[in-house]
Image 1: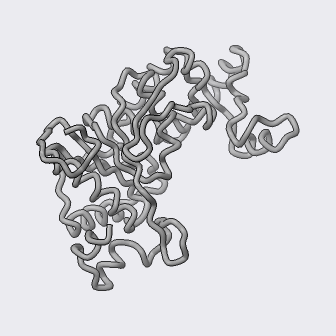
Image 2 (image 1 turned 120 degrees about the vertical axis):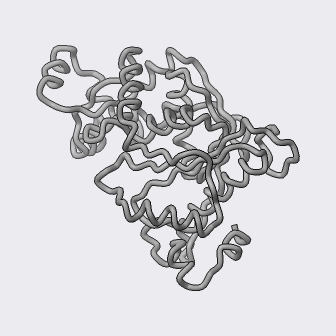
Length: 283
């Protein structure tokens, strides 16, 4: 199996996909599309499908939402291989990855607050585009050391320095084909929040590699985030999966579904009499 097509006959047990929701609310139809598409891809190849709970944001994640995820998966008839991974249990692994980036000279501490960044972005001498202006990247070593002694920073990726190491990079999307990684477009993203010690971009590439994920299935809203994730993979010596960015589902008002859309959650649809078979047929 090339892993670029779902309707294949060849069994390839090396294929592995995942569903990685955050327990910050109830799952909706869009989540079901991601989960079912990833599950079908893996099962068509005779490969692995894993479930990962992305619960690093402990201020928003709730045990009851994780329990609801399990209930929804069972209702959809989706099984998974191996134990469920939880990012909240993997802090030391993310810290080691951050240390590696710091040692490479491509990560720097950032002391800016959201208001600091907003003020800098609105000033006449603001940055190009709505990205972080690089304020803390330009701190002199003495000032940086003094602030590190008294403050807990976030950590940002120095994208320009990183690209100087990796050179040009490419990645493949199932629908859009080969892409040239444009990591500069998002600026120096946060790779470790000051409160939880990591951030989505870093944790997701570390975990995908650790779980042997070959094919990432997710919504097209994360297409742009892939560019910098590919850069992080190159810096950390991790493989780059194949990506499958699917369409976003919309509600009756035409807006893309979000966890705030209570009437579109799987729990609400189930309570309203919709069967799993009916939902699966609509995806």
